[in-house]
Amino acid sequence: MRHEHQPDRVLTTILFTDIVESTERAAALGDTRWRDLLQQHDRLVRRELDRHRGREVKTLGDGVLATFDGPARGIGCARAICEQANTIGVDVRAGLHSGEVDLVNGDVGGIAVHIDARVAGKAGSGEVLVSSTVKDLVVGSGLTFSDRGAHSLKGAPGEWRLYAVGG
Image (tube, rainbow, N blue to C red; front, side, top):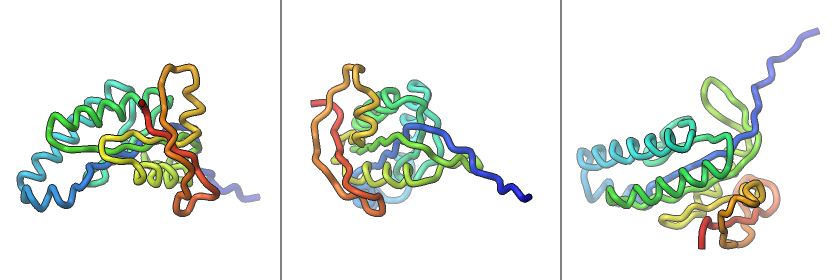
């Protein structure tokens, strides 16, 4: 009997961040100044990931994919990144979702990652958007949310209720 190796699956909270209107900013600044700004961005993201015990999976050009062992820490990190990004003159949006992911060679994969990418894509400038899964997991944490309605997320089954952190 042959046993296929199953990927290591873990429950995690996934964070995607993205610099808002990065292409326009890069064009306005030019390659050298844009690269310097991205390096500042990456340093501040890594500082906040360290502070909130997140794990950087990879950078995505003008954003980051990271994981957390708890959704409240992920939310705190996302909020701090959005706030700190303003100090270097960029606006960042962030999205979080919690679910099982496949761990493969230091990367993460699976539908939960795709769902979170879609959640992040729905966030506005400076906004931290979370799935209803994340909202439900942090009940009792004191975090507040604003309902952003039900959304179809490309490639994900059904509708997903999304919430903005705060206000």
